[in-house]
Image (tube, rainbow, N blue to C red; front, top):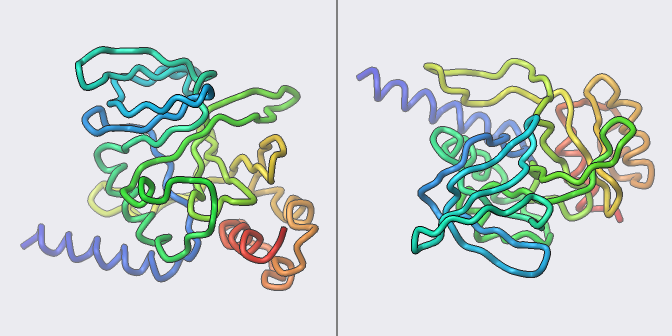
Length: 236
């Protein structure tokens, strides 16, 4: 009985979440499946379908990926050689990711990502240039708005603080809100924006889009996804 009640409660919360948050960001993923095929596109044009054997990280950033092919052969790929990749999340990350994409399924905008793979719940990461303090670095970053990232990409900041999320029996159902992200507009270098500075950043980021300013006269950090979606839909 308790299991049924818990399942019902989680389902109800997911429905409420889906109805409350439009153009929602996907939940950041930290662990990936070694049992399901992932898809990696290299900068030289090569395409790889293989299982992830290991991710090498340094200070939260992916530095290399070890893959295992159908014959059991292993190969290490440096992050510098990766253009983008679609990785399969594992465990509860997979559950959360599926819920997130269910919320966004009717909000797809035209972009260059593989929608068929994304709709299966895969996580999308790509190589991009990022401004970190006074230095520019090339990193592999997770895109949090893959369904509407044609003009502005929102990247996960692995070191961002979080506000409190809603939990049920130890499971983070709704998810906390990150207090900073990395933003990339067009082909520009990605840079960090923070919740505490968002009103100022909003005026710069959407200065060339009257529709966003008209629809959102009150600037709220938790409406960033809506701001970006509106920009993608109405502005250049």
